[in-house]
Image 1 (cartoon, helix red, strand yellow):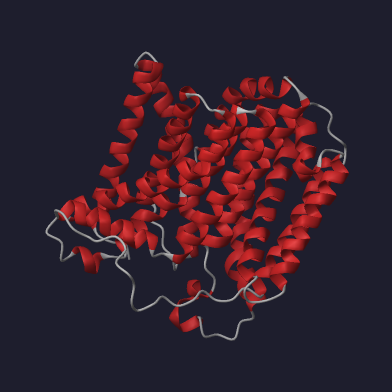
Image 2 (cartoon, rainbow, N blue to C red; image 1 turned 30 degrees about the vertical axis):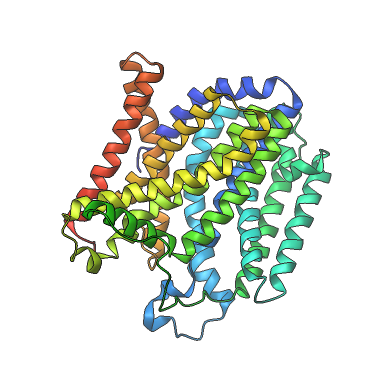
Length: 424
């Protein structure tokens, strides 16, 4: 974590030439890049808003306290996330300044705006079944999007992220960062409004259908049981399907605008949304010690099986999100292999981060730490695996070797963590 700003700075210096070359070709390419950046932040907002529960964080005793929903949202969700966001912004700035130069302030403001818009949209949708406040939040998001497009003077499709597209081309309006910051503040307010009226999660049913029979040997049974446990987590289902649908829509739009390059941007959104599943897999597995005590398989093996289950679910989600854009753009085999490599790298990093700092559904600090660990692990692995691939001579064979090693390390670490027992 301490070395993360330095790693981000080095990553920005390495990525800068490629980013600048990508946006230099045309204004539509720059606008699409800005939209892709904002959509990535929006997907992150969707994931956080839907994955983070509210009252359960307080524990059994404090959950009965007479706290208003607005106060609960501010204390449990908004303030911790703002503090974490400030730290994340410092790391993000270390990457953006060398990568984008003068456009870095606009990109930083676009990240906050995208995150807040995504969170407000997700929260508004979740609140629809309980209050008109959900519809108000969604209408407010639509209004902010339209105002951003008008202010930037770009097509409505790009919304407020037209400011960033113009900045990438050196045509930034002077009010760009301030306008994006204002949109972010308004979107945070809409998020809080929807959260104040969002109904509590429905209690789990005592009886469930055995859709996926658990059979075979001990390891097969452990893998299938882990799949079922992941599928029965309401916060994971809600977040995964929403993020997948959002990534599929954004990827299709980007593919229509810029072809296969847009499909790759959409794929990055899909991978980001799906990464929550392997990130949470180790923590969810640790809550099932009562189940694994009856298993004839050793505990390290059931832990590794849970990691594999998380990776499989996440890869299926990525496939579902990428398929529409890939079909429209007529993606080549090489482009699809790039998507696969990105997915394997990011999801493997998520599994490693989740094993190092297990996801706890009743501990907000642990969930935020898991997100931070994912960023740190992914950044560190990007350098380590890149150097390893170069030392092996580069090419497809080297990439396959290092990604395979990453997956093996993820499963081994998950197994080791499980064998050591749950943390108190």
